[in-house]
Figure 1 (cartoon, rainbow, N blue to C red):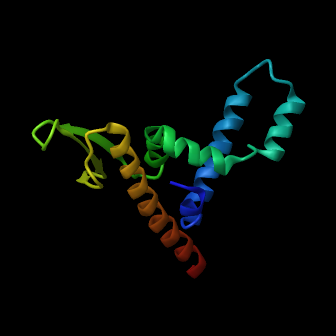
Figure 2 (figure 1 turned 90 degrees about the vertical axis):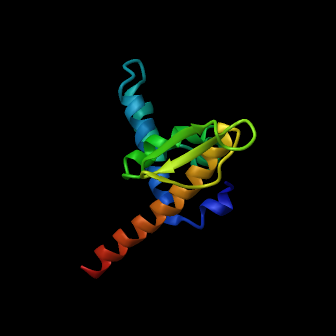
Length: 135
């Protein structure tokens, strides 16, 4: 997924930015030999090029985003079904339902699942924002 495609999901993109920022801050806090002034600088400036990092992770290791989606109650599982045509197929299961396109390559199926999860999370976050605005 490109940055232009991700920008169509602004609430999800913000949640991803916050997720990576929080991960960075907690990992720095857990490292004893990092100077306090460096920790403070990271807190103030965050990750540079965070959007590029999100795009790279989405493309290179989509399964690493499964934990992010878990935190939003969107559960992604990958199942291999050997009885499907060709040499078997990896099938994404999202919140207990088969979803996305099957593929003989796990990584491709993971990308399909992440694309669906992004759409589901955007819908969920948009409803949440709308509910708060109407309260």
